[in-house]
Picture 1: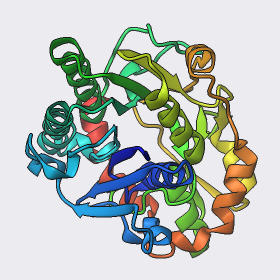
Picture 2: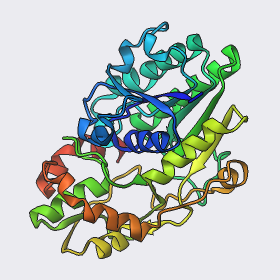
Picture 3: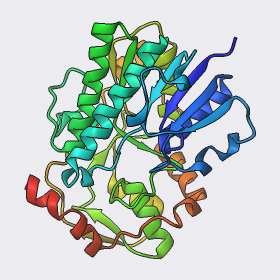
Picture 4: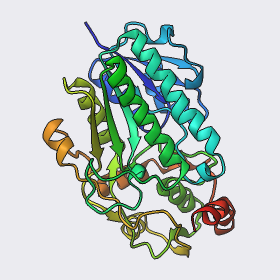
Length: 328
């Protein structure tokens, strides 16, 4: 009998790649998404598939006895507020969605008796960490987004401890790929740069561009989550990156275009680099899409960012004003 999974945030960036993988694996999928950031077109390839359904629902409104979770085997929890910079201005919203929303999903999963709950955590919980960073590195949340994601993770493990809900958590380092966010918030570098490329605007490089990020392609992230659901192991945290940090300057080189430098933001690390020994040894995960191939995939689909906001230096300065004021 086919497995049944709930994917919260399944119309979003990584969530939609998760839906693709589950369908390919013969798993039936119920997508939970309020479409505040997710886009229907991200799962439009499955619109005629009776094994994929969509519940337009805010995770904060999910009841403990929600019929959406009835007979569900796996829950993949991606839904939440994902843009980092606006968390400085809107901490209450981040705590409400990323913490209380997660608790709502945990309760629904608990009452449904799901086989495995896999939480999308964030490597931002480590702050300015030494690298490569393993799962035992001390937690240092530098801004509300990081704190909200970490508290959501702690709730997951509390439900694991108290209610014996089988939970695994994956701390994603720097996911990239097609369908990455195009929201109105100043966010991930790829969305900003691809719109700037379309508009013929210089790439706004933070600092001198030598900072490195451990970019991991979205379909590889989905594979890790699937492995974390399939394993008999529970109660574990796994770091997820490619283990091969890439500089912003290298990204600019691959995208090809002029640049303009903007001030480096306080509270952000010079390097993110996941120690992926645990996830490769225990879950047998391995990278499938290289950084260069991933960037090419995004350039081949650059039209996706046509309607994304164009971030100019003036707009970025305004959007990050509170960030500099709080973290400087």
